[in-house]
Amino acid sequence: MKSIIVLFFTIFSVLMACNSSKNQKTFEDKPKLESDTIRISNEEIEYDVIIIDGGFTSWFNSYARPRNYYTQSYLEARNRIWVLEWNRRAMLPSQYNPNLYEMTINYQTGIDYGFEVNYMIYNYLVYFQLTNKQQLGGFVPRI
Image (cartoon, rainbow, N blue to C red):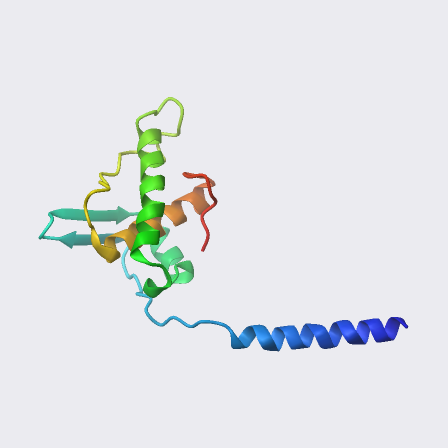
């Protein structure tokens, strides 16, 4: 009887493994970063995003989802919550580590920064939360 249960479990496991590989999405649209300083600029609405973090480039190249994985509205929603909490912590250096939250992020909700800026800010904030064991919003960041 035990051998029948083991055989059934083995067959079931093999079938599930074969079935799950068929449903995987593939995304080819992920950029490779080369430098530890990432700069994104847009002359039209006069903004610059500069990310200077030695570990972010390798994390991004290893773990970040491709560009077409998220929608811009998803990225904006997460960024709004996380940046708001980041800025709150940056203004309270006696409560939060001032070495982690050195300056505020000027991210205004009424401005359309475009997909690329939201994508890079989102990925940096995911990286920051995971590597520093911080939680900026009511949910755990995922990769």
